[in-house]
Image (cartoon, rainbow, N blue to C red; front, top):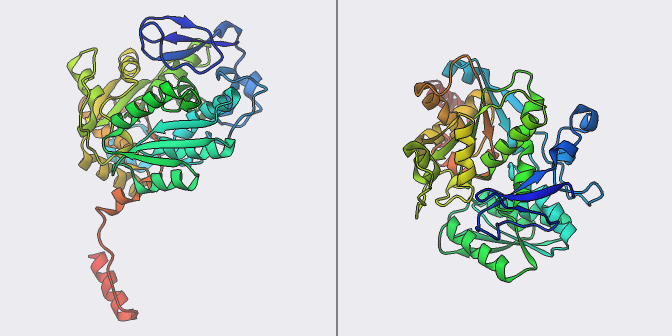
Length: 408
């Protein structure tokens, strides 16, 4: 076996082929670790493989003879945003658009690995709590693998586009009268009493392993390496994964420097940012988180310890943006660069002027924003603030009058 588990709190090391999420000694989360001196990596090993999650098979806890459940995830594009560079005065602004993934979000990276492992273990039912993207991804990959999927969502708190994906892929949907944290608590209780059901939220360590490939791709895709990587933060699995991928690349001599990590939370759902700002080492959950960015509307993030560690050890930061700033950034990104990202993704662009004002980024630096999901995931957020279309009769004179109004 090429990997083992290590507790993020007490350091307990555990061997085991089966998925283990929590430490038996202290109850905290487990992280997958490898025998790095035995791992062969780099261009000589994966040079002939396309840019994708499975390009990095040697750094994933899956055997080479396993049946890989893939929808061709990863290999997402990086866009240089020259008009945003002029607007904000930065040397270079890059956006890695994870909306290119099969179900439209970064969640596919972790799900391909977690579902592959579930299939290998003989699991028949997979389950998750979700604000949308996790459930859409899990349902698609479970369908591909021939597994049943169960999704528990907070009632009225999930975007219609994301819910539609779960439904069309055959997931069974249960709405709970509560928020995401209530839904996650129920799923955890279920998987403790039903051993035939496997949890696929980001506390499943195999999810983190797949998601770390995002940062690995970044460091291979661009010649001018980013000085900072900006990510939206909800349950904090993604910033945890990005930090892990960067650390592994540095440990293995594949990069020289690790970029600073900047986490961005919405003001109405910012328990980690509050802990960072006040300098404490504990997160106070928010009972009723509220934000237009549904993907990060989480008040009790499972990966908060690793998120704080990531920003502190990388000399980064954790900041907040308002809903108004998020919607404005979504519009700016779409109209200036032609990139449609869901509100949580736009939070990274909304963070740029705040980072400049606070002196957390220098104008000579390269900033990379991770757009975690496509804008079609949550179209209501975009259409709710749009200018209503002009209505005319099918006459050329009416069209000319409408054009004069538009041109002002």
